[in-house]
Image (tube, rainbow over all chains, first blue to last red; front, side, top):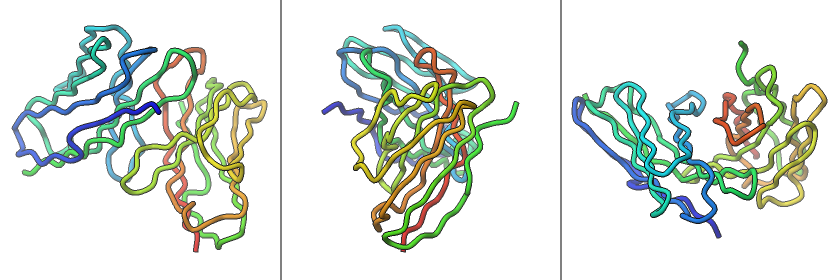
Length: 112
Length: 113
């Protein structure tokens, strides 16, 4: 059974602090790793699509790294703002099929 | 460019009934995938359609079915509803040529009483 694990499950961070969380996925048959942000009452929105080992992506104060050999990706948020409060989901594309396998998400709450 | 449109937004049904949910993808997108979200669970993959063909299917019972039309619009049907089918159902579209990022609709919140 293929599993994508995200940790921690939830995180409370003070406004202005930086934070990071982890996505672990199978290291074999890797094709791509996606990160999505899901704000309350909205739809999930893609942040990054990562395909190469060692990839680093950045969007504003959010960045992500990828290690396909050991099967993990980190998402970093620098100087958290209240609008960063959301659930962050990662999803793993296998090489062999068209099914995205999702983690359960990390719920991030930024305290003013 | 219009986003992914799902209808209806909310639905209340009783056990044993059936329900049909609709998803209109972004213009030009040929892939539509469906997901079930229940509290505390990650997104559970139901199925994915590309050019009217089901390319992949998740581990859901046969009561869950779907189809895609020639204009890429997709419907999902759940027959003989059970209380456990209460969930948020999301659809997502993408061009479908490769494993590109998905664009999600707002979802249909289904409550089974």
